[in-house]
Length: 146
Ligand code: HEC
Image (tube, rainbow, N blue to C red):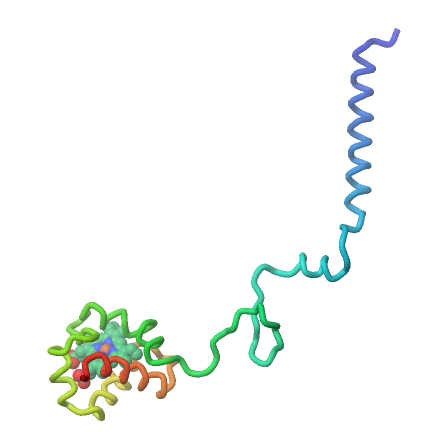
């Protein structure tokens, strides 16, 4: 005699087989939408818009061209010149900058490029162009000049 339990097991086995088949079938199905929709969904989360590429209006604009003096300051010089690390003249501190300015711009520029004492060459921005470094120096000087 076939027990009730056998029917129970048989039923759950066939349910399992059926749901496996159903899964396989649906995995093969094409998701709804046009090819463009699908392509859009498959795009990586972040897209890099390289110079010279037409990336559309929504693409993030990657900064090109030289950094502004303020940008260089905020990325590199700020590490020391916001708090006076190593005796560096603090941004906007007129008293600290007065004797520096008195040396003349050529000396300040020389020390920006080549460093002096605890001031490192190029203020640690080794990738900066002379133009960018000069911008950063002028930005700092501009904070204390009337
Ligand atoms: C690691 C710390 C540090 C960083 C980063 C730094 N500086 Fe300095 N800076 C100093 C110190 C210390 C001095 C004072 C040196 C001295 O006169 O003994 C100084 C002095 C200066 C002076 C005055 C030089 C003089 O002749 O009086 C200028 C201009 C200057 N820094 C520009 C910059 C610029 C521009 C940057 C960023 C591109 C920068 N610094 C980044 C530490 C730093």
